Image 1 (spheres, rainbow, N blue to C red):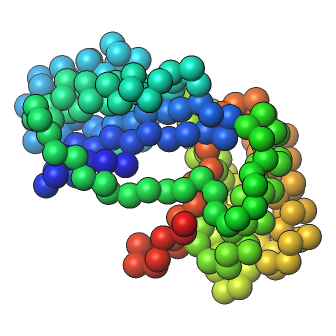
Image 2: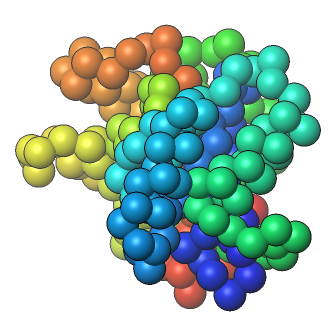
Image 3: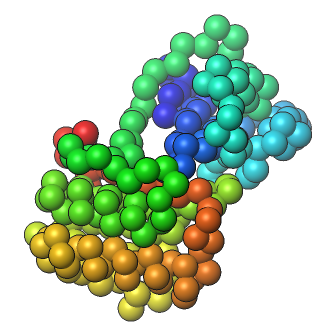
Length: 212
């Protein structure tokens, strides 16, 4: 995630799914604009394939898209959609790695279950932090996982608090919990097993060291 120096409302980000597809994201057109200018920025984003989600505009792009074309898309969206100044100076705001640890990840075409199991086992081995699991085009939050008090807490995105549970950090228990979580996501909550899957590893609190 990058933002215009001294104006973090004008931000952009590129997110990679496990299958190699991308999603480009930018912030909302500024609240300080006149309503007409905000609508103009929103219309530009909509006309160029961006979709409005909570607190952001997103554009799914194909795996065949080049890094250069994606960079151009974000540059245009910042300037035309968010009215960022020409010659803008971007600074890094945050980076969420998609994997931690030294083990080789599953191949891009592996199932959701394999990717989720790999990520949760790596998080448990690290013994701290949290994991965001998103999916779809555009992506939405599917589940969270946290390391709290020496246990792994799994929290699928659902209105029912009873869907959250915790397990020990033992690899066998974590692997079983990962498979249970995937089954819940696909079978109970109707998440598409073929949808792009996004996994982000992050610190539990902003003051904690990053998970790299």
